[in-house]
Every structure is written in C-alpha cells, then in structure tokens.
Length: 119
Image 1 (cartoon, rainbow, N blue to C red):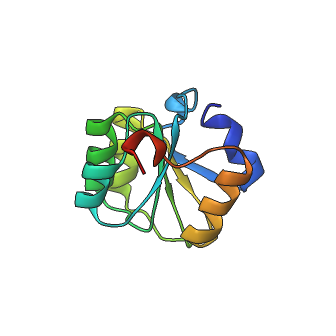
Image 2 (cartoon, one colour; image 1 turned 90 degrees about the vertical axis):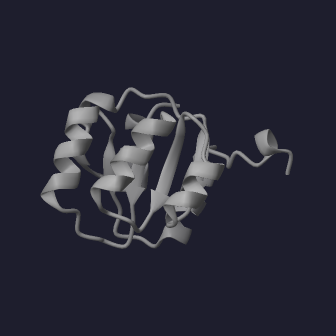
C-alpha cells in the first residue's frame, strides 16, 4: 500500500510533501517522543504523532519513513510544512485522536512493526 491510498479512507488532509504520496508503507509506528521514534520506527513506516515541529520532518527523513500523520487537529507551522515539501515527506493531518488513527490504519491492513522487532 502507498501513502496516497490512506488519505481518503482516513479523511486525511495532505499539508505538505505531496510529491512523496507514492511512498510504500511497510508498517506503522505511533509515538510523540522523538527518541522513541528514533529507536523504534523502521524505514517505510507511517508515523502517527501529535508533534508538529520541523524536527518531525528531520526524523522522518533520517529514518526513511513513508510519511507522518499529525493528529488531533494540531496546527503545523509553516517551517515544518516547508521542510516536508523540501524533503518530499508527506505530512498528513487528522482531526481524530492518535488512538483512532492507529485503529483505522490497522483496519486498512497496516500493522505495527512489532514482529520485525521480535515482540
């Protein structure tokens, strides 16, 4: 599945990085602490978070994540959106809670990467 295939079913808004909507999703990861994401997310994951600052894009780019879903209607500043566009990292906005977005990703067949980590 690619990022563009989750936009409509989850009611997401593409805020930045539209040129990366063809990125393949390998799984999902949800966390708000950047250190947790650095340690636990895997390349190709879609990251679900409340965080909405430029470091989110930097981490997503460094790890090769498929994209970032920012939840709960959180406002995203222009610097973050610009960085998403520059790096081709899709930044998708959701009005729902992180829990709800993760549940809906699971309904779409996107699993966490726990199996890859031996859990």
